[in-house]
Image 1 (spheres, rainbow, N blue to C red):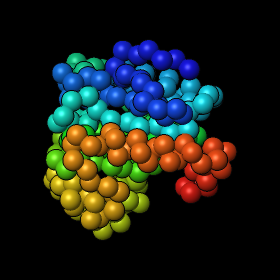
Image 2 (cartoon, rainbow, N blue to C red):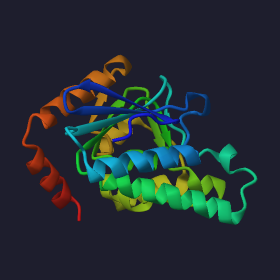
Image 3 (cartoon, helix red, strand yellow):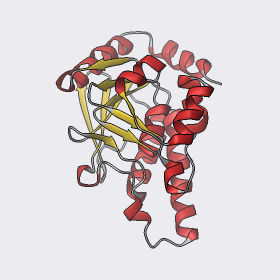
Image 4 (cartoon, rainbow, N blue to C red):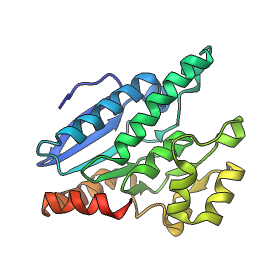
Length: 220
């Protein structure tokens, strides 16, 4: 498995655990084409051979933003063909995340907006810092959620709530996200990774083949 990337950082905080950090803090950890390529490669590697990894944690660099979504500055000046090329990479990356054979815990360390919220929605479940916020903002920009957000949000919070969130584009708090079923646990900011790691270790201590087969059958 490749271990060095331009836009994401990988560490092994415990046996069988991979910590993935979205690492563009100067751009709010927003996803540019290179991040799409890096994440696509990572999840392809995990799909082909997860080696000894039994659980993945994904978080963002910094204390305020998990992921600000797609990097709009990266898109400025793109032709339609270039934008379609980038979007195809993002689609493949999100499918790779969804199909990752081991559980992926989202450790949401701050704002998860637009594509960043869609990314969080594809994780198996979420722990979030007490200051985290969420939003699906695409309609405020004249576009639509293009990474499964319409379906995945409805699965998480129910269709009627999802309609309100997506139609308005309004941000909502981590407390609302927890009450609505989007977030599993709220933690203090400095305890987020430790809490996620505790759960990841418990998952990693279970039968790995059972976990993989269970993950395949929960969502079809």
